[in-house]
Image (tube, rainbow, N blue to C red; front, side, top):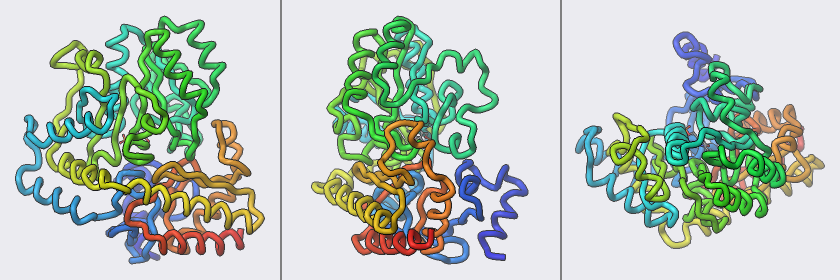
Length: 425
Ligand code: PMP
């Protein structure tokens, strides 16, 4: 039995399903999850000391690759100075100042510890600010696992075939209106009939939780115009896209100023850190200034803040996103060409350092198109790549991530591996 198999058996004794987050269990693709022992740059090594080129990057945070020396040093220094105070520190002001400088829509920001907390708090704030209850989300978008948002969600919920969770009271879910991503007419109709009751739209501005799905320009424009017209807030959930698709995030690429933004993943450089922020008049409703409550023992944790500051400092270097974007595009184009050459129904797309691979003729634009993907073929592709030493997300509903540590040679080796895998599918 391999060490990975031994660990998976042992893990299941005291951890439900052997994992601390569901998709890690390989439920969709089958087989034994890899237990990682270490990472460096673009690579991870599993418990059997097999090396993989890593395109998961801890599901997005590791934009500089694993164990980047500057980030490790910052974390070590912060840890040695004080792991947590539960009181204000100077470094968290530095991070808040930096975020507000980098994102023009962000006038004030609060730090939290996970993307789930960020979106949950942003929604509570939107409801508290507007005095309205209803929330619009889109089918296949995942915004963390708070009750209001576990309705027709993406990511692991799609992987396990239950896009809505048990344990969410109907009286909570009834306030969430689920619409179709990229369907402008439907959005207009809902605002025309229920506009006065809608507190906010929350959206993944490029969706990465039903694979990578781009929004149409008309959809992006309509969300901003309709919320503005009806006194609702527009929440850009940039937990995944923030500082991943570009330095100005998705809102920079779209040319849209949302009322609130949620950040996570890259902003914490691999440590538990996330944030929500936006318009100062809206943020003024948060405790202790206002009546909307939100708090956290480890919020603004100094070790996490240090990792975030170190990471943001490096991605602001001139040319960072040009280089990352070019590498990610090279990967997507290389994979698409390899699939086509092998006669597969296959396509790929990339935005900044984020990519999608699809067993569809074209990159999907809607949830329905994503659901029409050839799943068994994806699973065989996943395992073929895994054998070749390439680690992509163990489910077809996830986006992939390239880091600055991936070299052109890594990308070429990945495309060559995919060619061998396609030939056998
Ligand atoms: N929003 C989006 C867009 C996400 O992709 C995720 C996590 N993948 C979350 C929120 C939740 O973040 P976390 O897992 O840190 O709670």
